[in-house]
Image (cartoon, rainbow, N blue to C red):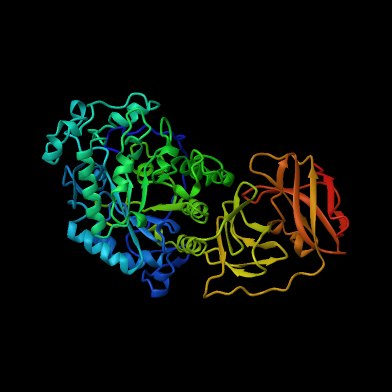
Length: 587
């Protein structure tokens, strides 16, 4: 959460800057992306394909959408593979403002009652939930329990708004001291002083009773879980000013065994993210920063950054991950606002294809500018992109599978799930995929816009993926892989290239005289190689035994610029007893 023109929370992120490519602005209507469009109706089969458990699916953040707009779009959202929808805060708030730039007003509540000007009434909330049940969609409600709206800026920053519920406003025991956090490394201050708004005394059990009643009212009307805003500012039992808020409030929820609850724990300072994970699921904000960097936002592409979750050793099954959140997009710091649709989509593929975590897709406002639409309106619509839908459905189909991550250079990630499927994210140039795999032998058709097919044979996957494209590979009930017989007399040959120094952005490849080495086409060269022992590189290729091949090494960058090593072609006879070719790169 945040507040207009005020720094509500310090940002523990790298300041990202730089020019970005202009992307197609997508309006509120159904739009085509990458030549693929989504028409927006969910069949019974598509709805039933959503996971049974909220944690096993992906979340669509319908930021600022009204209850009626969510209800009207449920068929499309279900068909797009989203298991859950997260609303904006549903509590009454201090103003009736509806301009998009006033989004912050939803995070300045005045009561613990359902319904507000921007999103709709209590009855509209109930109707939305009832309709969502028909599609197997869970509704997660954003809850503001840490603070209320204020009476203004300056000296009134920590004074409650005059229209706060009188039973809260006039109870002196419901409030913390009227001052803001000064030391973000001090847990006492982080949980007992304000973040630019009047801070509620969440240790007070009478106040807790009001919060519990509100949450249970939402459950009675069909809510399936809650996102707790500013959760790290509500004390844990073990804190210096500890209380039973989390144990008592979460323990008092009706249908609690079936609810999906998570807390906004923005990492940095005295966050104690692991402590909160003992009570509920938690956000992984630092991981979001790493994913943005991984796709090249603010620096060079480096998919390896998206591998570790950077979440204080919290089990991944407890994490909610995102490429961006409403805070990183909308706050004055604009941490992620300049990201392109392409970067958002590639980042989504990196996180939503993975195992265990529950990923959240933030729907940006529609229209031009940062806040181009009014509160209550539907958003930009990138969620309808065919590649995003393909990744969502992959995530749902792989719910019970583990993961194995591989990279080909810094620009390509292979996310393998069990033995059943793989998503390949290529942030570089045209790529020849040649990697070990656990997938079953067969031909797999790419379900994403990159098209083409990939072959798995004898523990290796091969195929071509165009620059900047995604491959989504798995078999669903409607698509059976074409079996291919195991290749005969093939040898895994390792080429070891010594003294191959490179400049930033370059990688080393092997090209040669046979199709398995690209037939001298540099766009089909095998690689990039592994540089684990730089400047020595290794490239592995599966070659037919007994074949005499001509080959050479080359250096190539993401733009397709390449440099062959000098001298004559090298020669090697493929042999299972000698499956190695070691040489020094000739400058």
